[in-house]
Length: 116
Image (tube, rainbow, N blue to C red; front, side, top):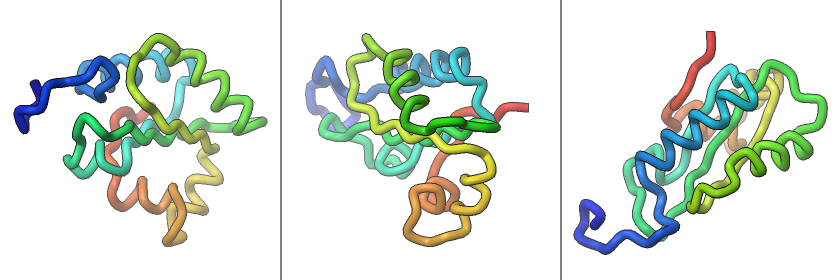
């Protein structure tokens, strides 16, 4: 049961699944940071929501190939995830621009992991 009394679905986003996603992504990508944004960060998470994750890596040669690779790393975790990958340089520049994912992650997100 969720905190609002609604039975959890097998695909529901849970703190345990979020922790496992973070563990897998850190092991596979060594990101500079992982940021949850959207409903997972604002506390409005319900059984109908997905997990929005921004993966910031030091350098990324091909963002889309890296997103695909990391999606495979998360295979088997039964929860809907929107996974966005960016480089540190792109994050630094876009995090200052309202209307971008990076801005939303910076201003409203929750850092789940921050590398050294």
